[in-house]
Length: 268
Image 1: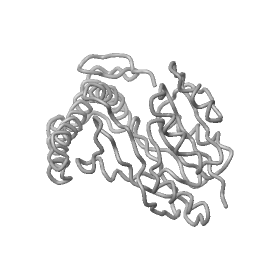
Image 2 (image 1 turned 45 degrees about the vertical axis):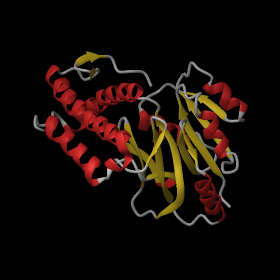
Image 3 (image 1 turned 135 degrees about the horizontal axis):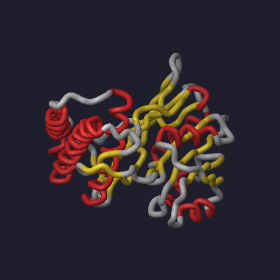
Image 4 (image 1 turned 180 degrees about the vertical axis):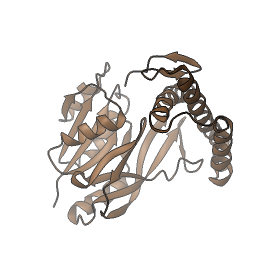
């Protein structure tokens, strides 16, 4: 039976980290928390649960998660964020896998909570994630801030029943703050990896994203909340491409554009 290391990166996660850790008690053989300088009770709560807490300066989402995964004692890794927890069904699925681990990595669905409501459409569900892997066969990739855990070529994949429960956003104000922050980071990554985007993407990309999520991904089934989620996702796309063009024009690689102005990048 393989032993599992649960690995979590944190920054001011005191609100949900206790729920996250509670859901891991029966599943994880160790819990490694890599914290990037929390100023709230995050580290204190983690220590109360017996976690191994390591301080490490934030280097970027994929970089931080790759570094954190390397600190684990065991090769079989369950990777979570501090605002995520295992549903009862998913917990049982992982316990079954421990009895017979026969894949290199396992996917499962993530169910997101927006403004106090669990959302099952609007382009944010099933939101399938690879989070349970043999680290010798996997690595964190993607463009910051949208990191993705990937399996190497020639590996095998499995799918587990149950949801990873994610407390995504409590309010529209909090969501808008995150959108502005992430759009700036995405803009810099776009310029670094793809160059200046074509002007029409500033307008067509958000339009298509809204239509796709609201109509084709059935966002209207989620009521007013679904409409708001689809609108804000489209707004994120608009800011990302607009700020990419402005960032390229100003030629200021070390900085990001937030809300139309050049500002220093937000901390982790």
